[in-house]
Length: 189
Image 1 (cartoon, rainbow, N blue to C red):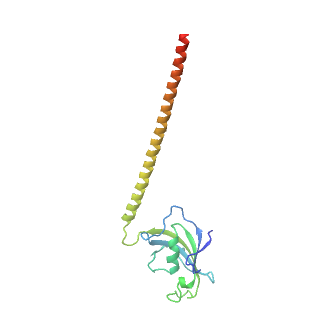
Image 2: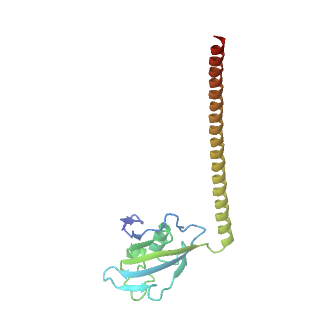
Image 3: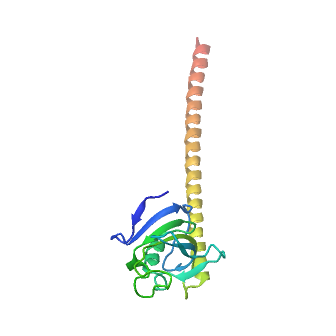
């Protein structure tokens, strides 16, 4: 669907969007750094699936930016929104590399992950109340702006009606003067 985007600048992490998120979807942030993902890991060389959450329909959860996942995920998932599915191709230095590679993955392997960002939650130490309070505050500001805009529109409408009424009164006065003069002249003759 999407074009390949080089997120690392050196071809080490390439992201291709498979399914876009909804426009108003939430993205990871400092306050929403706990992520839930569904994924499938594939060895690029063989096409073999080496890990997946799809078989048992589980969710993998981790905190972004804490080094608990491969470097490619920390880079790529920052660019995603909830509901988005992307193919992330990672060169070995952005995947497991030689250090810490699982036994069934060659250390020099290029990996492909198909990742769906399922959720972003508040980071540890940041209460959900704080996030919902902020959301409520933003919603209240939006309502206040809508009310102010409606009042402005109503005032504008009233001014236009007042102008129209004043113009109609002037027109009526002019008509009555013309009408009165015409009758008066007619009677004088």
